[in-house]
Image (tube, rainbow, N blue to C red):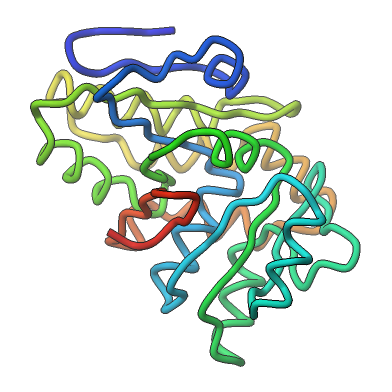
Length: 224
Protein backbone atom coordinates (compact mmCIF):
# COMPACT_ATOMS: atom_id res chain seq x y z
CA UNK A 1 0.00 0.00 0.00
CA UNK A 2 1.32 3.43 -1.02
CA UNK A 3 0.13 6.40 1.03
CA UNK A 4 0.74 10.17 1.07
CA UNK A 5 -1.38 13.06 2.34
CA UNK A 6 -5.01 12.53 1.22
CA UNK A 7 -4.38 9.89 -1.43
CA UNK A 8 -3.25 6.30 -1.24
CA UNK A 9 -2.99 3.36 -3.60
CA UNK A 10 -4.07 -0.13 -2.57
CA UNK A 11 -2.81 -2.96 -4.75
CA UNK A 12 -5.08 -5.98 -5.12
CA UNK A 13 -8.77 -6.39 -4.34
CA UNK A 14 -8.07 -8.93 -1.60
CA UNK A 15 -6.67 -6.12 0.55
CA UNK A 16 -10.04 -4.40 0.51
CA UNK A 17 -12.06 -7.52 1.28
CA UNK A 18 -9.73 -9.12 3.82
CA UNK A 19 -8.23 -6.15 5.60
CA UNK A 20 -11.01 -3.61 5.29
CA UNK A 21 -8.66 -0.81 4.25
CA UNK A 22 -11.45 1.53 3.20
CA UNK A 23 -11.47 4.24 5.82
CA UNK A 24 -14.47 6.15 7.12
CA UNK A 25 -15.12 9.21 4.99
CA UNK A 26 -12.69 7.96 2.37
CA UNK A 27 -13.55 7.81 -1.33
CA UNK A 28 -12.85 4.40 -2.82
CA UNK A 29 -11.85 4.47 -6.50
CA UNK A 30 -12.05 1.05 -8.14
CA UNK A 31 -9.68 0.62 -11.10
CA UNK A 32 -10.05 -2.52 -13.22
CA UNK A 33 -9.03 -1.30 -16.67
CA UNK A 34 -9.20 -4.65 -18.50
CA UNK A 35 -12.13 -4.78 -18.37
CA UNK A 36 -14.78 -4.29 -15.68
CA UNK A 37 -14.23 -0.55 -15.11
CA UNK A 38 -14.11 0.09 -18.85
CA UNK A 39 -17.31 -1.87 -19.45
CA UNK A 40 -19.13 0.09 -16.76
CA UNK A 41 -17.86 3.44 -18.01
CA UNK A 42 -18.78 2.64 -21.62
CA UNK A 43 -22.31 1.50 -20.83
CA UNK A 44 -23.17 4.52 -18.70
CA UNK A 45 -21.60 6.92 -21.19
CA UNK A 46 -23.85 5.51 -23.91
CA UNK A 47 -27.30 5.76 -22.43
CA UNK A 48 -27.57 2.81 -20.04
CA UNK A 49 -29.17 4.08 -16.84
CA UNK A 50 -27.72 1.66 -14.31
CA UNK A 51 -25.36 -1.26 -13.78
CA UNK A 52 -25.83 -3.68 -10.92
CA UNK A 53 -22.72 -5.68 -9.94
CA UNK A 54 -23.53 -9.25 -8.93
CA UNK A 55 -21.37 -12.01 -7.51
CA UNK A 56 -23.69 -14.97 -7.98
CA UNK A 57 -25.29 -16.36 -11.12
CA UNK A 58 -28.63 -16.87 -9.35
CA UNK A 59 -28.78 -13.16 -8.55
CA UNK A 60 -28.07 -12.28 -12.17
CA UNK A 61 -30.78 -14.60 -13.53
CA UNK A 62 -33.25 -13.13 -11.07
CA UNK A 63 -32.47 -9.65 -12.38
CA UNK A 64 -33.01 -10.86 -15.95
CA UNK A 65 -36.69 -11.34 -15.04
CA UNK A 66 -36.73 -7.64 -14.13
CA UNK A 67 -35.47 -6.60 -17.55
CA UNK A 68 -31.72 -6.53 -16.97
CA UNK A 69 -29.30 -7.59 -19.70
CA UNK A 70 -26.71 -9.99 -18.27
CA UNK A 71 -23.03 -9.34 -18.99
CA UNK A 72 -20.26 -11.37 -17.45
CA UNK A 73 -17.11 -13.45 -17.72
CA UNK A 74 -14.88 -15.86 -15.87
CA UNK A 75 -11.17 -15.65 -16.63
CA UNK A 76 -12.05 -13.45 -19.58
CA UNK A 77 -14.50 -15.85 -21.24
CA UNK A 78 -18.23 -15.08 -21.51
CA UNK A 79 -20.32 -16.85 -18.89
CA UNK A 80 -22.74 -19.56 -20.08
CA UNK A 81 -26.35 -18.37 -20.49
CA UNK A 82 -25.34 -14.71 -20.12
CA UNK A 83 -26.34 -12.31 -22.90
CA UNK A 84 -22.91 -10.75 -23.35
CA UNK A 85 -19.37 -10.99 -22.07
CA UNK A 86 -17.59 -8.39 -19.98
CA UNK A 87 -16.74 -6.53 -23.17
CA UNK A 88 -17.14 -2.78 -23.74
CA UNK A 89 -17.05 -3.34 -27.50
CA UNK A 90 -19.77 -6.01 -27.44
CA UNK A 91 -21.93 -3.91 -25.16
CA UNK A 92 -21.50 -0.81 -27.29
CA UNK A 93 -22.59 -2.74 -30.38
CA UNK A 94 -25.61 -4.12 -28.52
CA UNK A 95 -26.58 -0.67 -27.26
CA UNK A 96 -26.53 0.64 -30.84
CA UNK A 97 -28.87 -2.15 -31.95
CA UNK A 98 -31.41 -1.98 -29.13
CA UNK A 99 -32.51 0.20 -26.25
CA UNK A 100 -30.74 -1.13 -23.16
CA UNK A 101 -31.52 0.57 -19.86
CA UNK A 102 -30.24 -1.83 -17.21
CA UNK A 103 -27.30 -4.24 -17.04
CA UNK A 104 -26.29 -6.80 -14.43
CA UNK A 105 -22.53 -7.41 -14.48
CA UNK A 106 -20.55 -10.35 -13.08
CA UNK A 107 -16.76 -10.49 -13.46
CA UNK A 108 -13.88 -12.56 -12.13
CA UNK A 109 -12.38 -9.84 -9.94
CA UNK A 110 -14.19 -6.54 -9.54
CA UNK A 111 -17.80 -7.46 -8.87
CA UNK A 112 -16.79 -9.37 -5.74
CA UNK A 113 -15.47 -6.06 -4.43
CA UNK A 114 -18.35 -3.94 -5.72
CA UNK A 115 -20.93 -6.17 -4.04
CA UNK A 116 -19.19 -5.78 -0.68
CA UNK A 117 -18.39 -2.05 -0.47
CA UNK A 118 -21.01 0.62 0.18
CA UNK A 119 -19.82 3.34 -2.17
CA UNK A 120 -17.16 3.73 -4.85
CA UNK A 121 -16.16 5.62 -7.97
CA UNK A 122 -15.31 3.58 -11.06
CA UNK A 123 -12.17 4.62 -12.94
CA UNK A 124 -10.75 3.46 -16.26
CA UNK A 125 -8.38 4.80 -18.86
CA UNK A 126 -11.54 5.85 -20.68
CA UNK A 127 -12.64 8.36 -18.00
CA UNK A 128 -9.36 9.15 -16.24
CA UNK A 129 -9.65 12.96 -16.24
CA UNK A 130 -13.33 12.94 -15.27
CA UNK A 131 -12.47 10.96 -12.12
CA UNK A 132 -9.53 13.25 -11.43
CA UNK A 133 -11.82 16.30 -11.52
CA UNK A 134 -14.32 14.56 -9.27
CA UNK A 135 -11.62 13.94 -6.66
CA UNK A 136 -10.35 17.51 -6.98
CA UNK A 137 -13.88 18.68 -6.15
CA UNK A 138 -13.72 16.63 -2.93
CA UNK A 139 -10.46 18.01 -1.52
CA UNK A 140 -11.67 17.63 2.04
CA UNK A 141 -11.82 13.85 1.69
CA UNK A 142 -9.16 11.18 1.36
CA UNK A 143 -9.17 8.80 -1.58
CA UNK A 144 -8.11 5.17 -1.80
CA UNK A 145 -7.16 4.26 -5.36
CA UNK A 146 -7.67 0.51 -5.67
CA UNK A 147 -5.72 -1.22 -8.46
CA UNK A 148 -7.67 -4.48 -8.69
CA UNK A 149 -5.47 -6.61 -10.96
CA UNK A 150 -6.00 -10.22 -12.01
CA UNK A 151 -4.13 -13.52 -12.18
CA UNK A 152 -2.50 -12.25 -15.38
CA UNK A 153 -1.05 -9.13 -13.76
CA UNK A 154 -1.79 -5.65 -12.52
CA UNK A 155 0.34 -3.36 -14.72
CA UNK A 156 -2.57 -1.60 -16.42
CA UNK A 157 -4.39 -0.88 -13.17
CA UNK A 158 -1.28 0.35 -11.35
CA UNK A 159 -0.43 2.57 -14.33
CA UNK A 160 -3.82 4.30 -14.17
CA UNK A 161 -3.69 4.51 -10.36
CA UNK A 162 -0.17 6.00 -10.40
CA UNK A 163 -1.10 8.46 -13.15
CA UNK A 164 -4.12 9.57 -11.15
CA UNK A 165 -2.13 9.73 -7.91
CA UNK A 166 0.82 11.68 -9.34
CA UNK A 167 -1.49 14.12 -11.08
CA UNK A 168 -3.51 14.78 -7.91
CA UNK A 169 -0.69 14.67 -5.37
CA UNK A 170 2.24 16.12 -7.33
CA UNK A 171 0.59 18.07 -10.12
CA UNK A 172 2.41 16.03 -12.77
CA UNK A 173 1.21 16.00 -16.36
CA UNK A 174 0.02 12.60 -17.51
CA UNK A 175 2.07 10.84 -20.14
CA UNK A 176 -0.83 9.42 -22.12
CA UNK A 177 1.42 7.61 -24.60
CA UNK A 178 3.08 5.69 -21.77
CA UNK A 179 -0.28 4.98 -20.14
CA UNK A 180 -1.60 3.60 -23.43
CA UNK A 181 1.48 1.40 -23.81
CA UNK A 182 1.04 -0.03 -20.30
CA UNK A 183 -2.54 -0.99 -21.18
CA UNK A 184 -2.03 -2.33 -24.69
CA UNK A 185 1.12 -4.38 -23.98
CA UNK A 186 0.53 -5.74 -20.48
CA UNK A 187 0.06 -9.45 -19.79
CA UNK A 188 -3.68 -9.08 -19.28
CA UNK A 189 -3.96 -7.48 -22.72
CA UNK A 190 -1.95 -10.33 -24.24
CA UNK A 191 -4.30 -12.85 -22.66
CA UNK A 192 -7.39 -11.04 -23.94
CA UNK A 193 -5.96 -10.83 -27.45
CA UNK A 194 -5.21 -14.55 -27.32
CA UNK A 195 -8.81 -15.45 -26.46
CA UNK A 196 -10.30 -13.14 -29.09
CA UNK A 197 -10.72 -9.74 -27.43
CA UNK A 198 -8.13 -7.67 -29.27
CA UNK A 199 -10.80 -5.07 -30.11
CA UNK A 200 -11.46 -4.58 -26.41
CA UNK A 201 -7.78 -3.95 -25.74
CA UNK A 202 -7.62 -1.40 -28.56
CA UNK A 203 -10.79 0.29 -27.36
CA UNK A 204 -9.71 0.48 -23.72
CA UNK A 205 -6.31 1.87 -24.73
CA UNK A 206 -8.05 5.13 -25.59
CA UNK A 207 -7.39 7.72 -22.89
CA UNK A 208 -10.21 10.05 -21.80
CA UNK A 209 -12.75 8.94 -24.40
CA UNK A 210 -15.63 9.64 -22.00
CA UNK A 211 -16.49 12.38 -19.53
CA UNK A 212 -18.53 10.32 -17.09
CA UNK A 213 -17.98 9.21 -13.49
CA UNK A 214 -19.81 6.01 -12.50
CA UNK A 215 -20.79 6.00 -8.83
CA UNK A 216 -21.74 2.95 -6.79
CA UNK A 217 -24.40 3.61 -4.15
CA UNK A 218 -26.78 1.14 -2.57
CA UNK A 219 -25.61 -1.67 -4.80
CA UNK A 220 -26.35 0.21 -8.02
CA UNK A 221 -23.90 2.04 -10.29
CA UNK A 222 -25.17 5.15 -12.07
CA UNK A 223 -23.53 8.05 -13.89
CA UNK A 224 -22.57 11.01 -11.70
